[in-house]
Amino acid sequence: MDEYYAYAHANKENHQYKHLILEELLEEAKSGVVQENGMLKIGGVSYPANCATQFDLSMGGDTTDINWRESLICPITLTNNRQRAAVHFFDLLSKPSTSDMIWVSEQVTPLYRVIDQRFPNTIGSEFLGSSLASGSVNKEGTRHEDFTKLSFDDESLDHIISLDCLEHIPDYECALSEAARTLKPGGTFTATFPFDINSQENLIRAEVNEDGQIVHHLEPEYHGDPVTGKGVLCYQVFGWQVLDQLVACGFSQASIFLMWSQKYAYLGPDQVIIFAKK
Image (cartoon, rainbow, N blue to C red; front, side, top):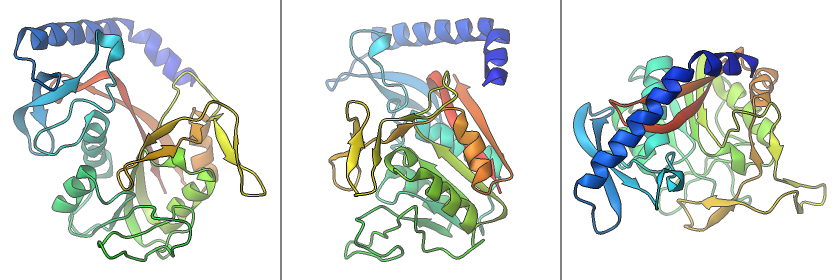
């Protein structure tokens, strides 16, 4: 965390530059055609297609109303800002080969399709219910995996990609241990989740007690579920503490990376990517 503050202090001018760029892009977009659905168009390069396109930006009255992480949808891949940045980051840091075994902790989403189309040994899954056995497949062809009880053998995966999943798992440390168990030595873990860059400690919003009951410490917060279409409870918002927890769970190193690019339209606040190596 201290390292981040030193970085932020040393890059004040860069932060101001990014802010000016965003203001200019928004003004340019507003002067263009606004779609009937309220979307603005921001130009950039779609990755991994590496071709120019226009990203859909949903906004309210001003820049404070923009959910930058979930907006800037690519019309080619249908992935949003954080997903596009995470895929790009995964390629840069993990350097996957086409023969690598990759598990993505989602399956019915555009993100999974982006990975699966490029890497034939990709396995996707969803959490379909606590009564099911990990590795089972429903009649729609969707695989079930409980992140705390993965069906994969020890050291069988080269890479794991988990985007905005761990905040919904009350025993997230067990999930991190399972990730470390199933990765091969040198395997990589790329993740995103709600992260408070100004907090050392994780914020526990809710937890499950010994009786299996959910105890709320803060007003319940629900996020969208691509499987059910309903809300799923957010149990925690992570802080820098999670890096030490990753190492304690079996990873040799863990880091936070910040992604921002005008060219690729990774815009708004820096996209926070968590990267760990076994």
